[in-house]
Amino acid sequence: MKPDLFEAPDYYNIDDLLTEEHKLIRDSAREWVKRDVSPIIEEYAQKAEFPKQIIDGLAEIGAFGPYIPEEYGGAGLDQISYGLIMQEIERGDSGVRSTASVQSSLVMYPIWKYGTEEQRNKYLPKLASGEWMGSFGLTEPDHGSNPGGMTTNFKDMGDHYLLNGAKLWISNSPFCNVAVVWAKNEEGRIHGLIVERGMDGFSTPETHNKWSLRASATGELIFDNVKVPKENLLPNKSGLGAPLGCLDSARYGIAWGAIGAAMDCYDTALRYSKERIQFGKPIGAFQLQQKKLAEMITEITKAQLLAFRLGQLKNENRATSAQISMAKRNNVDMAIKITREARQMLGGMGITGEYSIMRHMMNLESVITYEGTHDIHLLITGLDITGLNAFK
Ligand SMILES: Cc1cc2nc3c(=O)[nH]c(=O)nc-3n(C[C@H](O)[C@H](O)[C@H](O)COP(=O)(O)OP(=O)(O)OC[C@H]3O[C@@H](n4cnc5c(N)ncnc54)[C@H](O)[C@@H]3O)c2cc1C
Image (cartoon, rainbow, N blue to C red; front, side):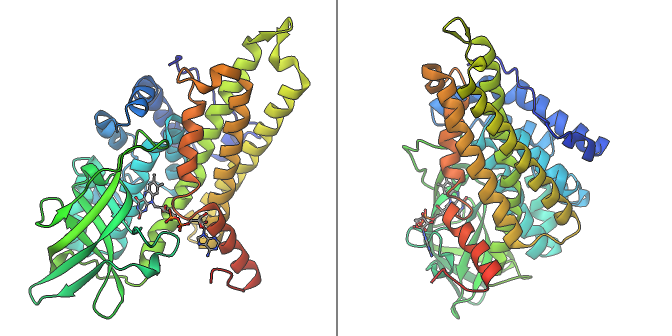
């Protein structure tokens, strides 16, 4: 793979809106990605393996629980810092960002928000340091966009719960130490349970043959009469709103992360357009190529402003789920379109692993589907503005 020469576009001087701390956090994440992710990521994506050696680095840049309070091992940062860290990681690879998003927003967040003090103290410091890795089990083979239909269930056996069912498409599952699992009790109410690797009847087979997010491990979570201790139930929130609250936090991070992937493709295409000579001049001198680049930077700038404003609203606890849906949908769609234009600008070279563009393009096919599909987020906006439910 080519050396990482990335220079971040900032067409509207959005840096002026950031604090010194934001810039410091962003720049250290950017340096780490250049040093520890870019040189190895293509090889790991090609062999479809998560590079476990970067776990310590992810913890050091604050990617595991950026906004979780320091008393639990988190970085205690604001939401814009969280977004900037996700942007920088996804600039390197969406699969690596997925690992960090799951750990922070889908595992640490519910334990922090819905768990007991004992659960927080037991799990959060280990998850923040990367000593333990987590996964989040919501999706099932027959219930994706409609998670409320889940059939994974648990029964109260007096001194423990008995968990049965299966989850599919679970990021980090093949190597997770703990899984936050959503299941129905005997009354049909959804609750979160913390399941630990090593519990009898719990297995995590890997899903192979993905063309997307190849550097992220994905798999199943299978529960065959798993005895879960009663103290592993998350007591402070139940119902579908509990997992959806986690998804809000993760979707917000994706809205920033997608900008990173788009910035990387734009930067690569811009540099290539000045170096590649055809018909005696750089291809960047042709109007058709300038149109592509001009539209890319316009869309990136709009996405940056959307994410920044959403970050301000998140910091003030005012961001709605529908606002987060809009940003996730818009920014991932923006990024995927940019990967396709940038790929064309590189001609044949664009399909090789010498450049990051094709990897970003394939990764974003998962990002546009997980955490609510492109269509589902549109329906969320539709419901929000009309008050009419088009889901069913
Ligand atoms: C790589 C990867 C990693 C993932 N990681 C996790 C994870 O860690 N944890 C987890 O729980 N899940 C995870 N997922 C699952 C992901 O969230 C689901 O794939 C997603 O929610 C969509 O569900 P589905 O694939 O079953 O598609 P379906 O729900 O079957 O949807 C198929 C199509 O139908 C459309 N559709 C569905 N309902 C409607 C409707 N009412 N109106 C109009 N159109 C509709 C959808 O938009 C989509 O285009 C992951 C997925 C992938 C690909």
